Image 1 (cartoon, rainbow, N blue to C red):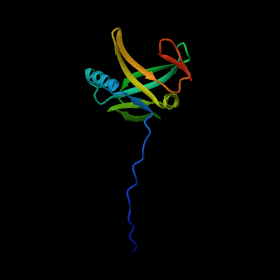
Image 2: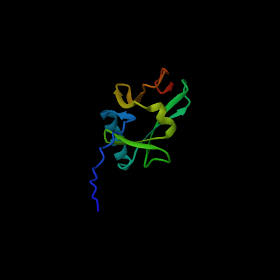
Image 3: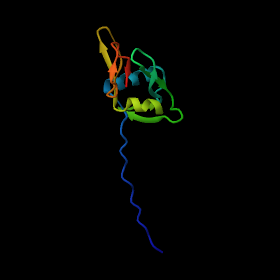
Image 4: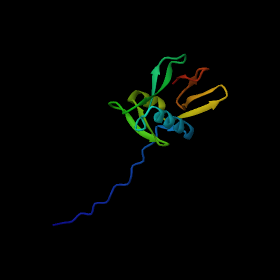
Length: 123
């Protein structure tokens, strides 16, 4: 009887589709803790609308849906649906705090143009 040596496969590098900055990750963790949903994650999506054709959406979600890709960035679970993923590859979610207020922003290298308010884009 022949013996076979099984060697473990090398880990597969999974490309991070969306990067969450440390500032955004801290704010997301804070929001999850406030709502008592520390095991939940952030859904990042694109939908039709806005003055440039598409707009971004962010929402807290407990688990992903059918077909979603799930991954982690800076300790935050992310859920992205199959349609949105093609528009969001390489995007970065950040949290900006200014004198006039704060909010989440998305820097998207796939956007060919953005509107003045920064919440919609065209691709």
